[in-house]
Image (cartoon, rainbow, N blue to C red):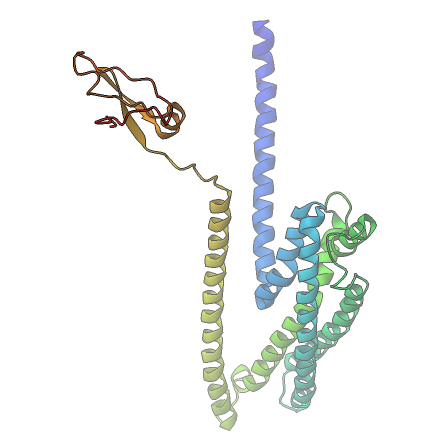
Length: 327
């Protein structure tokens, strides 16, 4: 029996090592995935987190509980409409700016990459407008805000969950594709402005890129770079402060939830000292109320060495005691 245990231990150790390696690989994969997601969504991180990632995560955590799921859907639908409306307006302005900047890239001394970036900006803006219209059509198929209450039928709740999250039991490939669709309008709008700024920078800084002789274009490029650097630095500082405020808000909400979950301790009642004969004991206030008061008539029991408690008489026959010992 001992030899079997010894011979089986190497196989068990190998299984443990394989499980540890697999867990470590998964951890590294998740870290790389989070880093990649943070880089890709950097231009629209706050919009992605507030209107797509966090609401869908809370809906998944609800697990079909209508008391939690329906209020989340009602609030998310209103916020998503506002997001798509702002995306359409911003993408329309970006498309106009791209159309206005495309003739600059057709000059003889323009770089081809500037023209490519202007075209990419225009395409991203167009796709942002088109995808926002399509996403609005999905929201229009959901019940109205007035109808989204806890009394909604079970069939409608299941349909809502499947339309928004695109899964029945556990999140799969379709769910992540649907998450990508929900954030696609904001993503294309953000990248439209990024490519427009990149195209404008390449076009204006072309004299430095081509190493052309000093001219007024070089002075214009220097002014553009100084103002652009100040704007970029302000944007970075603003993003950092916004991130810090988000973390403070999350810590505050977490602390408030933990404080609400801690049961309140019942109030501690004081203890009272009660004298019984020659002994003295401490009793709780509740026990003292149950036992009642014991009156001791010192005048009647003056001859005895130890005062004894008297029997309580009826209210009409009871004599008023000279002193009541109550400690």
